Length: 264
Ligand code: CAA
Image 1 (cartoon, helix red, strand yellow):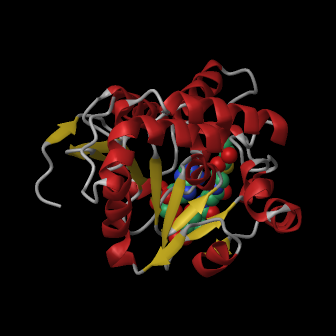
Image 2 (cartoon, rainbow, N blue to C red):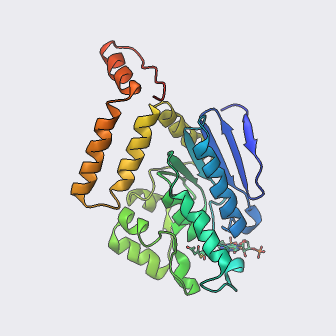
């Protein structure tokens, strides 16, 4: 990919976009990208801004080649009480990340621990480098995961492996994470961002309404019984028949040409 065209200013993340792909890089390398209040706020605001930006189709969240994120900022948390306003606020910003409507790809290299692993799991696709280590070590600090680490992890790897990670606090290697379906694929470190961008560009070329509906429907499956999920899927499926892109997609197939999608 060539030069980045747009860059937003944040203290703790680098937010850039080129055409339809936005990349948000966590940027507290000295603290292994520990997810401080300020970082979570910046990340959340950057993602929301890109979610509103019609030019952006897909986002990539990464920590760079060395580390994804070593979890919530322990220094910051050490003196906080359960009803501390900043904890509540932090969680509010954090939860907004789960509501992003565009596809989000996590590009994970090095440690993705605690809140870092949870952040990756909040994304829709996880590309890992060979050095990735994903884990939920909160038990070592006398707490448990607080942003999905007991729920999304269990859905991803099953009860028994999740129990081992959450109870013993041990991280998974990239190879194991791939075997357990916690990451989509593993690539050499130097190819991580390239692979994530290539996946992002592939999705960005698809008709936008169908992509949005597809993400919504897949996420719905985690929160509903099968019947309700199927009903939701069927409604979205029918709704897409009203889109111009659906007509164009089918027409192009029959005319043996490339479709020209308009996002309508
Ligand atoms: N919070 C704050 N600072 C952190 C941090 C964190 N989670 N993780 C690392 N750092 C800081 C270290 O304090 C250190 O800073 P100084 O140089 O100022 O001392 C710097 O980053 C480098 O870290 P290390 O020297 O420890 O690096 P290492 O390579 O020896 O070890 C590590 C790496 C194994 C990831 C180790 O840093 C570690 O275990 N970190 C904590 C991991 C953790 O417990 N995460 C869960 C946090 S709780 C959570 O996330 C709750 C939630 O779900 C909301």
